[in-house]
Amino acid sequence: MSKTIKTDINLQTQTKLVRAEPFKRDFQRLPEAIKRRTEAALRLLLSNPHHPSLRVKKVRGEILKGYSNIFEGRITRDYRLFFLIATDAYILLACGKHDDYLK
Image (cartoon, rainbow, N blue to C red; front, side, top):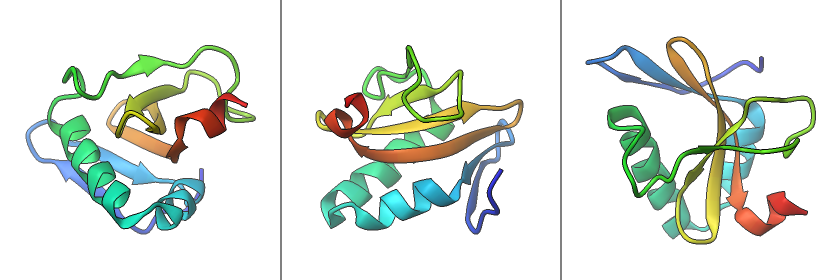
């Protein structure tokens, strides 16, 4: 897995966010308002991954080459984040417009 710079930790469960390089690159390209919404969605993912506003679900098919068992979470109606679930971490793989990943 890619080297990470930033790791967030939920102190109650010790679950952390690991930001892979492609996620960090995607995040930098997002509009400022969507960046703020993404950070809010990530805080919610750490505190309550089953929160209905995230609409977390397993992605069917291969949406990101080389990965299986990918999950999708909602940032806004048009934007999503994609991640893997490890024992003690959410490994953030990508984020961006939902339609871009359906192509």
